[in-house]
Structures are given as C-alpha cells and as structure tokens.
Amino acid sequence: MNAPSSLALAVPALSLKDIGKHFDGLEALRGISLDVAKGEIVALLGTSGCGKSTLLNIVSGLLPADRGELRIDGQPAASFRDWRRIAYMFQEDRLLPWRSIRANVAFGLEAERSRRAERIVKAEQALRLVELDGFARAWPHQLSGGMRSRVALARSLVVEPQILLMDEPFSKLDPQTRAQMHQELLRLQRFKNITVVFVTHDVEEAVVLADRVVVLEPRPGRIRAIKPLDLPRPRIPTDLAVSEQVRQLRMAL
Amino acid sequence: MTMETAKRIVSLLLQRGVLIAVFLLLWWYAAVQLPSFVLPGPERVFSALVGLVHSVTFLHDLGATMGRVFSGFVLATLIGTPLGLALGSSRALARFFEPILAVLNTVSSAIWAIFAIIWFGISDATTIFVVFMTAMPLILTNVWQGAQTVERQFIDLARSFRMSRWQVLVKISLPSILPYFFSGARLAFGFGWRVSLVAETLGASDGIGYRLRQAADLVQSDQVFAWTLLLVALMLLLEAGVLKPLERWLFRWKTPSR
Ligand SMILES: Nc1ncnc2c1ncn2[C@@H]1O[C@H](COP(=O)(O)OP(=O)(O)O)[C@@H](O)[C@H]1O
Ligand SMILES: [Mg+2]
Image 1 (spheres, helix red, strand yellow):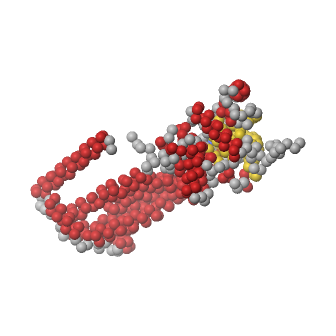
Image 2 (image 1 turned 60 degrees about the horizontal axis):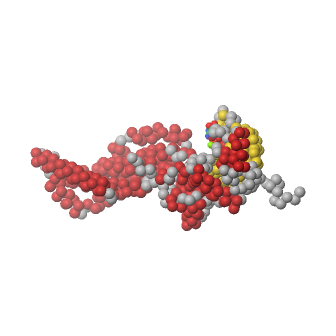
Image 3 (image 1 turned 60 degrees about the vertical axis):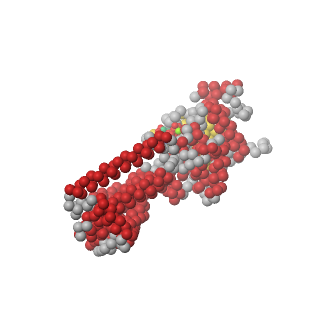
C-alpha cells in the first residue's frame, strides 16, 4: 500500500536487538529488543533495580553492552559518529556546583566551537522554556530539587537534540509543575519531531506522554510487555479514556 | 549592614585593640627588666623599624626574598600540579610513587638548604630550590587528593555531550580540584616563605634572611625584632588583603556553612 510516510518502512531512530548486560555476577539486562521510530515517545516502566538506567546508559553510548546490537538511524553504534544529536538527562540532576544556573545550561553547548554570546542567548531561551529565567545567575545550591531538575531539562534541550533520553525527569516536581512541563515537552517534541525515550515510575505520566509503554521486569531486567497507546491528544489525566488506560496498565504491572 | 553585624565588628575591633595594648604593655615591662640585647623595648624596635624602612637596601632585600619565594612557589605549582593530576588519574602510578612522596615529606627543609649550598653555593638558586622542595610535595599531595574526589557522574555528564578528554580536564576535573589546590598552595606558600629565610641565612648575600643573620651576628636585637614585626605585618596583609578575598570569590558558589 502507498501509505503516506509509512512509519513501518522508515528506518527506526533507535533499534535494539537482544541487548544484554552483566555487572560482575549480576545480570542487569537480558534480551532487550526494541525499535523506536523517529518522533515516537516511548516510556520505560518498571520497579527500581530492573535496569532502566542501565538501558539508557547503553543507548546513550556511555556504557558498552555485553551482547546484542544497538543501531542509531540504522547505523551500528560502533560506527555512529553523530552522538551529539542524542541528549541524555540523567536520573540525578548533575548540576555543576561551581557554575551558575545559566552556565550549567550552556555547558553542553561548549562541546562544540561556538561564540560565548550565542551560548548565553540559547541558555536563556532554554531557561525561559522551563520557567526559570529569573534564576540565570543563581547558584545550584540555592534551588530546590524540582527547580534543579528543570535546569537539567533545559541543559538537555539547549543542544537541540533529535533523540532525547530522560531518566525519571519529572519525579521531583510537584503535580502542577509536572503537568506544565509535560505540555511544554510535548509541544517542543511535536515541533521538532524529537524521538523521546523516558523512564518513569508514574503510570499516569506514561499514559499522558507516551505513544508506547515498555514494561520491564527485574532479575534479570527484561521486557515483559509493550503496550501501544492510541489515545487522542491532548490527554488529560481526568478524562475517562485516559484514567481507564491508567487503570488497565496498573493492573498489568 | 545590619545592626547585628555592625555590633559584632565594633566588639571585634575593641577586643583586638585590648589585645595589642596588653601585648605592648607586657613587652615594655619585660624590656625594662632585661638587658636590651636580649629584649629591646617597643620604642627602640619602632625606631629601628623606621630606620630599616628608610635604609638604602630595604626594597632590594624585600624584593630579593619575595622574588625567590615566588619563583620557588611558581615552579612548585607548575611541576606539582601536573604530577598530582597524573597520580590522581592512575592508581598504579600512585602506588608506585607513594614512597617517594613519603620520603620527600620527611626530609627537613634545613637538610635541603645544606644540599642546596653544596650544589648551588651562595646564589638565588639555593633559596629557590629550598622553597621548591618544601612547597612542591604539599601542592602535589593536595592536587592528588583532589583528583581522587572528582565525581564520576560529572565526568559522565561531560562525556554524554561528547566532550574531549581535554575539555573534561578543564571543565570538570580542574574546577573540582581547585579547592584542594588552593588549600595546598596556601600551605605551601606559608611554609615556603618561612623556609626561605632559613635558606637565606645560609646561602645568600642579600634578602631578609641574610639581613637577619647579619643583625644577629652584630647582636642588633632591635633590627631582628623590627624585621620580625615587618614580616608578621606583611603576612597578615597578604592573608586579609589577597588570600581571603580571592578564596571568597573563587568559592562563592559553595553552600554557606553554618
Ligand atoms: N555500575 C554498576 N556496577 C554494578 N552494578 C550496577 C551498576 N549499575 C547498576 N547496577 C545494578 O544493576 C541493576 C539495575 O540498575 P539500574 O539500571 O540503575 O536500575 P533502575 O534504573 O531500573 O532502578 C541494579 O541491581 C544495580 O544495582
Ligand atoms: Mg534508575
């Protein structure tokens, strides 16, 4: 069939095949196979210790897998050169205490040759996005945990990634700010067609954001189920269809 | 400034004033009891001090000593810092060189001074060498210690942005190590300054240490006391006027303690 821009035929942004990882005696991941299409949002859901962070570390290229194959845009990870298109927001905010908030956001831009003035402008734009433009000159220790994780989000977004990996990005936010950040992320994601893989403990967050939910189980970490969510957007948690989906997913866990 | 801090400053100034007055009084009383070559009185020392500052060689001597201390200190920094970084980055290297460091730390500065005289004779190099041998191990040890505390998580953050090894060094490692370097450098400078005088009494023909020995040989106790006062004042000035403000500025990002 001549489906317009068929997702099935396009090269996936991320392709994992039979990924496995051991730490000494511990088998952290086994047989992880997953394709993520360009522009897709995938949630990784699972109890703590089931290897979610390890999986993101592997996909980000920071940690080598013991076995299996990782492809980015169809290219094997070993020969992939364009890693700067992937941004990784860690589970911890990892703000550098000796840098101001603005300099923390600009940090990722310094990897490539660029003008200082330009970096400052971009960093301030990113701070506006997470509604912290009033704190550009503050030090990290002056901010609350929720504010710090928004700074970390700004730092990931400022490099304009095509693939965004996020490890429990909104866990430290209060419900209202979290909903606001969800909408901001979705707006940006649609606008730039960013591929997003994020980890969460929060089933409702997964249902509101994700196109697909990957449910992991521990010891060894492996995929238990993959649930596509074809609910219309925007998804409001109080909508019947959304809350029904949340209920079903909770049951499955 | 709040009322509270103003009160605190006034009370501090008062305390210091009383301390100085008590000190001068005791000094004056003791000086009356003792012969003046053992303990010259305050007024004699102050007039010696004025004479000293106006003497022809004063600036030259001060400059000579400072130049030697700075040269030794800068050399110690230039060599101690990369060595500390190297030891911090490799456990095997550190284990191999650790005994040498232990030896360096136990050898007294006076012994370095003797060696320096044998090797360099009466020259600038003698004092510079002694300052260097005293300061370098201190800087090395502190940088090494700091290098071991660099957070793995921050390095991974830089790696996630695909920064080069050089960028990781400059943007993550060096800022993490800076507080350790600073306290090491401060210690090294203090020790270097003190041992430079010892070295100069043995192996120099100018500089403060040389003048001190000269005064001692001629039993000019008032001169010795005048130099001592001057040195103390200089050190206090350096501490309050340069080091403290520099430290406050460099580490302004730190959580205020208390
Ligand atoms: N660097 C490491 N060395 C040893 N064990 C590790 C390391 N990183 C993670 N693990 C172990 O692997 C398992 C999965 O960890 P992680 O990926 O952090 O889980 P999650 O993010 O799902 O909570 C845990 O049992 C953890 O203790
Ligand atoms: Mg985790």
